[in-house]
Length: 154
Image (cartoon, rainbow, N blue to C red):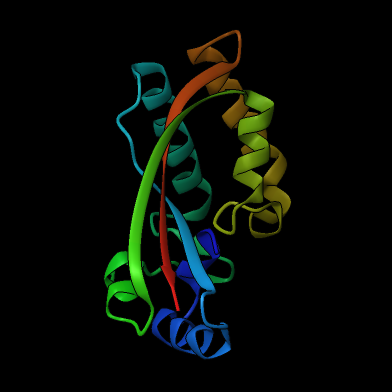
């Protein structure tokens, strides 16, 4: 599972998956962790946060409701489960994205989808694009992303 895991009743899902998993089978949960960015990417992130707040309000949306982060960390839930051999591996990548790719990513999320923005999605897109191109006229932003992969086996 990837980022979808935070939308689930995690304890229940882990328990049910243990019952469905064959001996020797396993479970992997992959998530991303915030990483300190270069100043250009920090400015990009600030623009995206501020424009999103302007259009959707100060609370992070989650579809038609609001996002409530999970109380438990993935690794704690997996360690407390009936699965065994918990392992964690992390890796960091550098990613270069153009403004178009950044907007594609923004619109692919549940908290800034075009459906959620409705008739304001075009204005939202124009504002993000304009502000990002003011920061960097080439429209290219490089950032680091760290992925954590948690695995367990039955």
